[in-house]
Amino acid sequence: MGHLPSMRRVQMQYNMLNGLIPRFLGSLRGLQVLDLSFNKLTGIIPSEIGNLTNLVSLNLNFNHLTGSLPSSLGNLQRIQNLCVRGNQLTGLIPLFLGNLSALTVLNLGTNKFEGDIVPLQALSSLSVLILQENSLHGGLPSWLGNFSSLVYLSLGANNLTGAIPESLGNLHMLSARLVLAENSFTGSIPSSLGNLNALSELYLETNQLTGQVPSSIFNMSSLSVFNLAFNQLTGSLLNGKKVNFPVLDIFDVGGNRFHGVIPPWLCNCSMLTIIAVEANMISGTVPPCLGDNLKSLSALILGHNQLLANEDDGLDFMSSLTNSSHLEILDLSSNKFRGVLPNSVANLSTELYALSIADNMISGNIPEGIGNLVNLSYLLMNINLSRVLFLPLLVDSRG
Image (cartoon, rainbow, N blue to C red; front, side, top):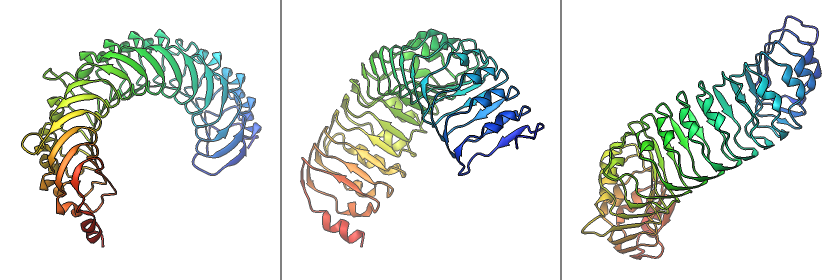
């Protein structure tokens, strides 16, 4: 193969190739595309790859490569796609990457890179930047907000610190994902993020963010995923105020310090499949409109709050959830529910596999028809006042 000067493409992805990347590939001077992704290649990236000065796309994703990025890759001035995700590459992110001005996709995710994010602001055509799942530290540079073509930014699962810069709100083309999750960011959520009107997925979970969620965030009309879980955020969830989430699919704010009631505007988000508000200080009753309106709901996670209900006022939401025919998870644990479970529990989705009403004040008999929930694998009712009369029924219903 080393004597094929007219070779333009080498695409061997999704095989079971093992061993080292052959050095003779560096002699294919006309090569424009080299894709060896999704194999079992080991060893280092040979420096000879830097001889491929006509290379436009280099994809080594998901192998077992080690070592650092060779400095010879700085010769690839025509490179547009550079992808080495899912390897075991180490060392600092090299400075020469900031000089590869033709880059549109830079994917270094899921490796062992460390150090600060190096200056990349000269990459004016960059549309995808993925540095997630490494050991990067330091703060987010404000120049990240200058990438006018960026549609996908993922920096999650690193050791990044400091505040989220307001300049990220300038990324008006950002339409796919903004992933800053699983870092150690502090301070408040910048209100400028509300300017990202095209953004589909927002992941800020598992940081140390504080303060209230800016009202501008609740009008990001293209959002399908809204994940702020496991921070130290406070305030209410814009009860009674205008919210515009017409395509919202996942709403996760669990593990914060929110108070107030479950916002009724959630009932207008007809495409919701997951609502998770567990481990906050949410009070009041559960609005029945959740079940009435959200026909696609698959998970309703309300545990560890201060929600109230009894058989005379508040437990009617259980009956409304029978309309959610795809419900798989229902967590009502550690609240202030009391009284008798309605018989309609037996009419919940047959796809339900996890039901928890543990640590409440539920009393009376368990509805006999609960045995109809043939896929139920996890039933938690400890620390209640119920009479456990349903076990034989479950056994009978499952043969």
